[in-house]
View 1: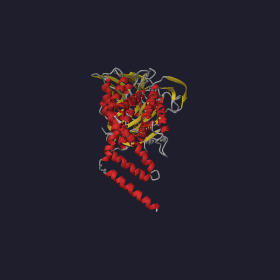
View 2: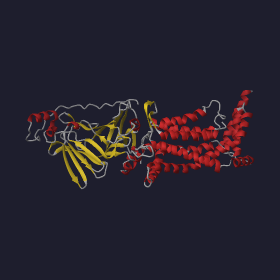
View 3: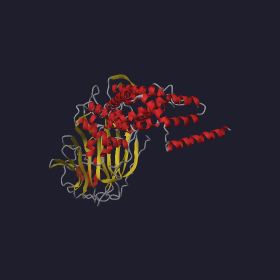
View 4: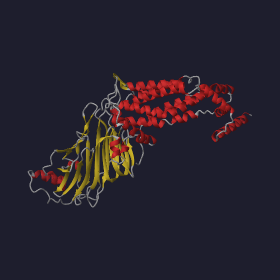
Length: 619
């Protein structure tokens, strides 16, 4: 699996720093308690060459409307033949299997309707990825007689056949009976992925080799979820380029410079995705994403509008591309099983965060779902397991806190003794830590190891397709927010509803912070440092506001996680750690000669040199 530039949008940054910030502030107190540019791309207009005489020998021999055919010949040249066929009507052809239904228009030869049979929207309407003209697919080319044509305005002739269990639809844009441009769709049973090919036969005399041929694919993403702003947060354009790297256009109105060797383009709509893949990479591609939700109360139909501009290459004067379409769920397992790097479409986090999700949480959560009766129970069980696995880290952090608590009287004495000499106070404090075998950092470093796990889960729950429309307790959809009260007004940054799981999670976080920092934060407040009591109250409040519109499954995890952490800390405090024994151990350590580490020795030397320099300056 090859990784390119990873997704890390504003909301992810806020969540990451909020979670990490709360943890770091708590660690600081526990361990040191005694101290869219909008960009637009313009397609280059194709220059028409001098017209050449039209070859009309392949036009149909008979027609019911010779005037219409003559007009078609004048406008379309060789492709006027297609306008005289019986298929030159606004008819559609339907192909379907047990999971996907597609309707393909004669005009343009592209899909005019794509319905996912097994899924419904939040308001029980069938899930359509394409319907009522929200998508277009067009090949623009120049003919040898100087005409610039678009396939979306021309009529294809449909032919349906069966190849074993596969349905085959051939859409041919004809110049003659044996000369045509063909779109070929092959739909297999039970598959969201269908084979798709573009090929031409006998059009080397029609295509102008000196002018570019371009493919333009556009789509406006329909809203499918209860919160359009939350859905839009995970709606984005993703593409693979080069040797398997991937990039994306996230929020806002964005355009990307042309990349080379494009192997797939995905218009991702949070839980559903439309993807165009090609076996022969496009030489380059240009992409645009436009946010259609300016006002959540007014813009309720679409999320974003996507566009991809992909030049096509002729081989021997003909087009020949083997491709695939995917219209289906943004489900990690389904996408990963295709073994075409499509798992990168699911935003599991960059670097170590994504690895933790791919190799630990996704397999483990799937395992739990295989036998547990509820997805909510699976979240709780997974949370319990995660907290038990991390309990040694919690123990080390709490042990460090206990040591620092025992040393507090001696540190207070040093603070008073050297209150006028900060350098000497710091030096003697470090000596005390070294003799006692305690270190403020011994509590920080183990706990910081939890941040990758916390953030990985922060990415996992909003991306878990399995949670979509799965209820638990009062939440009817764990992939969206739960609602216990609907407000008659809207609160900025909070919303027009009250979610209970975020309230419970915030209360649990507040209790945890009180247990770990509340008792001593005021008396140990250092001059010039932020008011830690204010931080303690602010952090749960920020969590409350931030998660009110997030997936209730994520809030359920944080609520359960903090409850378990509180329980583990109570057990450690009252059943495992004995402060008298810790005190005796520290006094014993202080009597023993302790070899100073290289780093500690270097730090002490630096402080001594600084102290000597300070004395010289006073003289």
